[in-house]
Amino acid sequence: MGRGRDDSQRGEAEKLVRTEVRFTAEANKALDEIAEENGISKAELIRYIVDNRMNDYLGSIKFIDPEQGDEIRRDIMRLMNELTAVKTELRRIGVNYNQEIKNQNYILKRGGTIATGSSRLNQALLDRAIKQVDESMKKAGDALWRILA
Image (cartoon, rainbow, N blue to C red; front, side):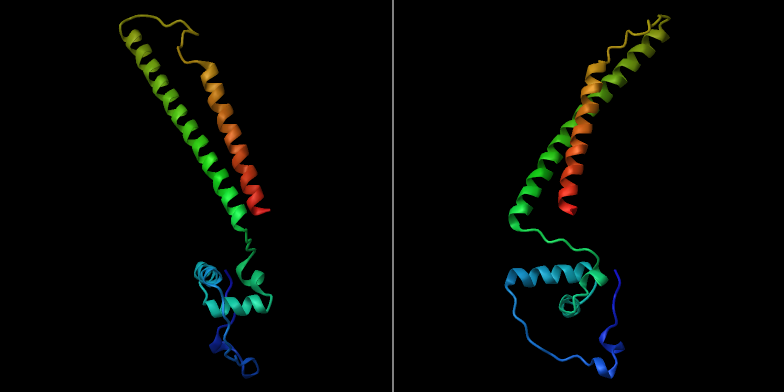
């Protein structure tokens, strides 16, 4: 985050004049948060905005309305729930895989043989988990694209 000249570096021609501006509590809070996130004072942020130089110093800032925010929050919660379900399913698959390997090792230690293709792991289960991850990642990408666009 670039930081412009501070008050001590301003020349005599750029002497600052004090003025009073009133904001709603919500707007004031938003200004405080943006200034804090970018490591500048609120006064400096307001000067950037008034000078139409905010993007030069703070980068691309996107504002969303409350309805968009609620929709995005719902989308993110749905994605988080899906990803949690995928994570749980993958853990189950991992447990099943570990059990299968232990069983095969036990059989081999006892002198038995293992026929190829006798694995109890279900390929359909793996395919379903992979498909679920792909779908969730596509939804996450679409939601992020809408947020950033």
